[in-house]
Image (cartoon, rainbow, N blue to C red; front, side, top):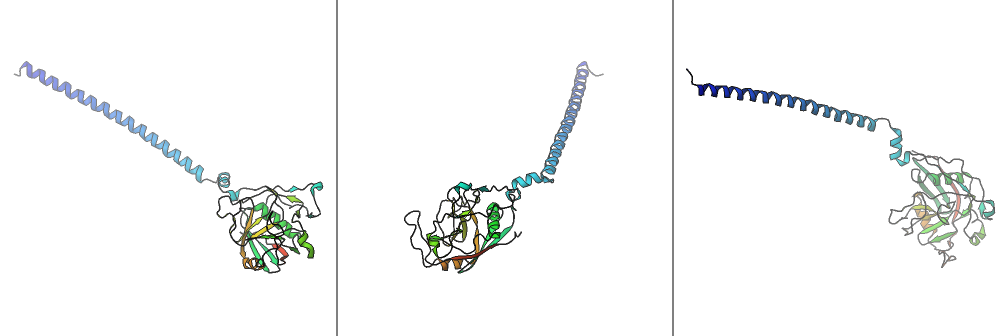
Length: 276
C-alpha cells in the first residue's frame, strides 16, 4: 500500500500537469488570436497598397499634366499698346490670333539675311508664347527688308521695323509691333546665361517683348532678363561674317554699342509649322 505522502505527491503532480495543460491551451488560443489579427492587418496593408497602386497607375491625366509642364495648357496675353503711346516707329499689324499655342515640339524660324540664311530652332515647351508671336509677325512679313541696327561685342540686334532704307542708321531703335507680351524661358540657372548660338529678345523692361531680338555669336555675360527665343542650328557662321567689320560706336558710352559697319539686311523671316 502506498503511503499518504506518496498519494499527496501524485495528486500534486496531477494538479501541476493540469495547470500546465490549461496554460498551454490559453497560450495556443492567444497565438491564434494574434495570428488572426496579424493576418487582418497584413490584408489591410496589402489592400491599401493595391488601392494606392491603382490610383497611382490609373488614368489620372490631371496629375500627369501637373507633373509635366509641357503637357499643361498655356495662356498668352497680348497687351496692346494704347494709341496715345504709339510712335511713328510702331508698326500695327494686329495681334496674334491665338492665346493657347502648342506647348510641345519645335518650330524652325529661317532668317534670310544678306550674308546668308540662319535657322533658329524654337522649343515650344519653353517659349510657346514667344514662338506664337514670331510666327504671327513672320506671317505679316513684319521684318522683310529691315536691317540689323545695333551690335555689341558678341551680340547683333535686329527686328526694328523702322530700320529700313539708306537712312536706317538714323533710327533710334525703338520700333516694334502694337502689342507686348510677357517674359518666358529666362536662363536664370545657366552660366553663361547667353552662350554662343542663343537668340533672345530685346526689351525695355520686364514683360515688354515685341519684335526685336539679338543673335549671340559669342558667349555673353548678361543678367538673365531677356527671353530666350531659341538657338541657331544652322548659319551662325553667317552672323559672324556679317559682324566682322565691327560697329561705329554710335551708342557709346550709354547704352553702348553702335550700328554695324556692314549693312546686314533681313530679306525675309519664315516660320515653319510646329514639328513633333
